[in-house]
Image 1: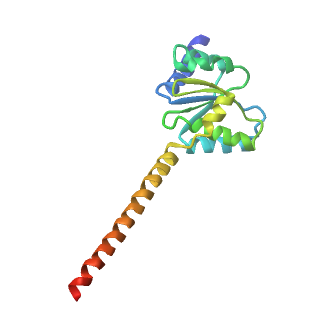
Image 2: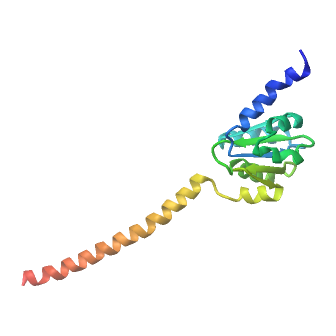
Image 3: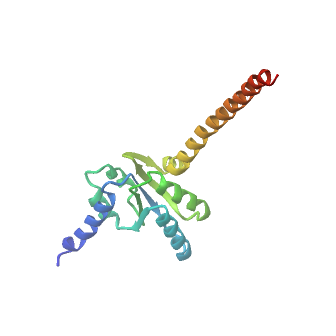
Length: 170
């Protein structure tokens, strides 16, 4: 079997992972211990992020002609690819948070919702809270004024009710 035929399934696998992805981040994982790598993979899995080490040439072939082709300058040395099809900020957020504890993990760059970001840009993307957190904040901010407004209306109604009842009793 020719080498090309052996590599085609891997390229197809990467292309499938990237197909429909909201974001992809590449990292240099050199220097991570097995324990750290296992913990990182667990956190990424829990966040719904696909994480795998691929050969750079395979990623290049799979990304060719897609928005993820912008990652090509970062495809040197050991490279792991973290991809999310659900939460666009999840790979950057989890990897950046983990990199704070494991200084050997280096963010190289990424593509988030069609836009390329270098390592510094991915760091900024990582600071964006998850969709669920943002929705929770929005709901909380909406409920607070409504609850306060309802209390005020209730107090006015009680006050008006007391004032109207007083003459009826006399």
